[in-house]
Amino acid sequence: MAERTLMLDDVRISLGGTELLAVDLTVNAGEVVTIMGPSGSGKSTLLAWLTGNLPSAFAASGRALLGGTDISNLPPEQRRMGILFQDDLLFPHMSVGQNLSFGLRGPDRKSRIADALASVGLEGFEGRDPATLSGGQRSRVALMRMLLSEPKALLLDEPFAKLDAELRGQVRDLVFKHAKNQGLPVLMVTHDVADAEAAGGRVITLRS
Ligand SMILES: Nc1ncnc2c1ncn2[C@@H]1O[C@H](COP(=O)(O)OP(=O)(O)OP(=O)(O)O)[C@@H](O)[C@H]1O
Image 1 (cartoon, rainbow, N blue to C red):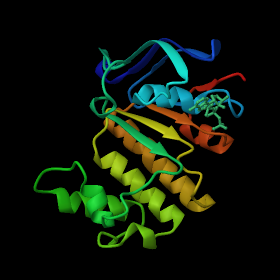
Image 2 (tube, rainbow, N blue to C red):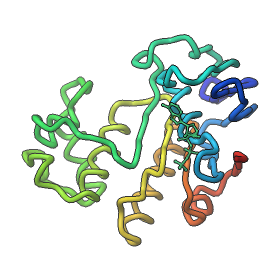
Image 3 (tube, rainbow, N blue to C red):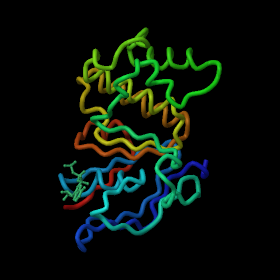
Image 4 (cartoon, protein in one colour):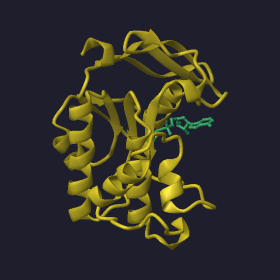
């Protein structure tokens, strides 16, 4: 599955002329690599660079290769990255079902959405207004929206922080299983050692 690896080739990001981070890393298909490190060490900045949304205050060099293709200069929407942040927002004027069908095609769309909701304990939530959901419920909808969009790699930034302990384990397993089944490379930023252990892969620690 070499075509599904995510390679960070000599990536260097600096801020105000000072190097913030330097990373050389290959994430294999189905592998979860955890990024840890103190606050301010550049974890979120690295993910922002990968998505094509690096703030202009930073300067970056190096390449990101997804399945062997250099994506470093592609616009964000062409990178096919599944992105999940702790404070992920759902579209407020759409129902849960409409949020999930965003970018989804095909005649089996409805049943895929129903299955996705059921898999995170939200069976029948299609018609709900996101404003009426709890933080944990919203974060599960955002997660399923990401997975349904058929990304080629996953970038997760504290993705399970809003979930209580029991749900956290379940949702985490679901994401990692999905990544394994689909052969997706995953980069996960977390402060939580249990998240890193559950991922079971390599841990990269950025220094402050
Ligand atoms: N838009 C921006 N403009 C200028 N500096 C920024 C910007 N965003 C972040 N920074 C700075 O860049 C550095 C890295 O921030 P980043 O958010 O990547 O750290 P982090 O490791 O994700 O931290 P945390 O664990 O607290 O989320 C910090 O010193 C931060 O103050």
